[in-house]
Image (cartoon, rainbow, N blue to C red):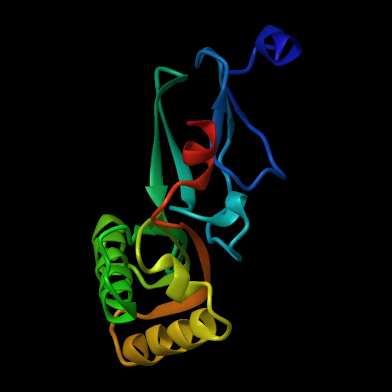
Amino acid sequence: LADLRQAPIDYWALGHIHKRQTLGDGTPVIAYPGNLQGRSMKPSETDAKGALVVECADGRVANVRFHACDALRFAALHADVSTCADISDVLDELLQAAERRRAEEGGLPLVVRATVDGRGPVHSILARPGVLPSLLEELRERSAAQLPFLWWDALSDATRPQIDRDQIRER
């Protein structure tokens, strides 16, 4: 960074890193603009992708702003299923979480990798063999005809039992 700051250049557009970020305090602007379209569920490929638009005035950088260009978003989704009583409730919570995320992303088509978490009664149900794959298949079927496009890439379980055994052991 010190070498870049010493050069008589107002804007550095660095490459190779796909996650958009600005380095330093902004004088000069030193940025990884990222890429125009996410390509996978890797953390560097998720969320809004696009270009940095650099506006100049009097031969100097006046403003740098992000402009989304992606036609499809890859997104990680977390759903708290603590209050869910059965798989039907879990399904509803996931579908609602996906709709909230779609609204946050401006209605763009989504590829979602979801994780259910929380402490509650559905933990033991989700831990049964075959339940998560069946739930993922049901999510895909329910979303197949939706516009804009929504694809459930994967579903993982991070729930915990309703009873906190570690807390009980400590007592």
